[in-house]
Every structure is written in C-alpha cells, then in structure tokens.
Image (tube, rainbow, N blue to C red; front, top):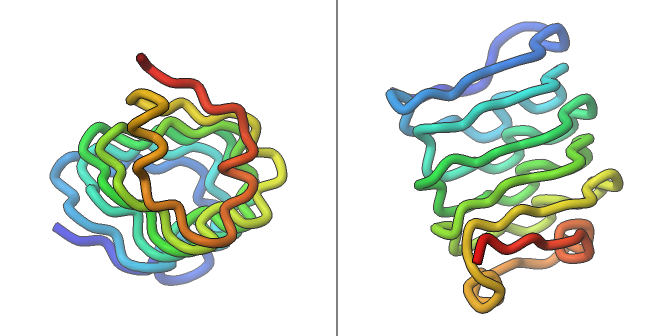
Length: 135
C-alpha cells in the first residue's frame, strides 16, 4: 500500500500513524502540514520532503526497519528529538536543514555504526545535536 500527497488543505492534520501495512509514502506527502506527532512503523524509506515545513512537529521516532531518510525529509520542521534505528544507512541532502530546535538524536546502534552512515550535505543541525547511542 502506498500513500501519496494528501490532497486539499492539510494544515489541520495533527497526528498520523503510518502502520506496517503501508510500504511507502510519496515525496512531499505531508509537507507544510500541521503535524505535531507521527508514528512510523512500516515505511522503510522516509521520502523526499515528506515532513518538510512541519513546524509543529516535536519528537519523531522512526521504526525499526527504516533504512534511509530522503533529501529535505524534515527541512524546516520543529523537531526537537529524533530516534533513528541502526538500519539507516543514508541520510539525504538537507534532510535536517533549518531544524533549529533539534537537540537530541537517539541512535539504535553504536558510535562506530553511526559513523558509517552516509550523511549528505546540509545536515549540520543533525550532526551538531547530542547523539545518544544504544550501545
């Protein structure tokens, strides 16, 4: 099952749960929405710009099984902390640009595993946050 752009004015959308039956979410699907909370369980790739401009978004927990975070995925969002599973192998360009409130990253692996992730240009707010390792 796929989910593409949410049609219409979705500024009032505040909470979503992407369940295990959902395999992908289209690029920019929830961009500029009023999301304050998300739960991601089945999606392996966080698409390009999917949560771009979600200024009210606070804490994000990516599910076990997520392998990549696309370009501009959280650009300009209000996230303060994010949990990233150790299966993530790449983080796209500008995925966390302008995430000025991002303070804590909870990573499901070791520091050595974190250092093997391909983190592309424009992710200073992510890399300058406090990284908490599971092991």
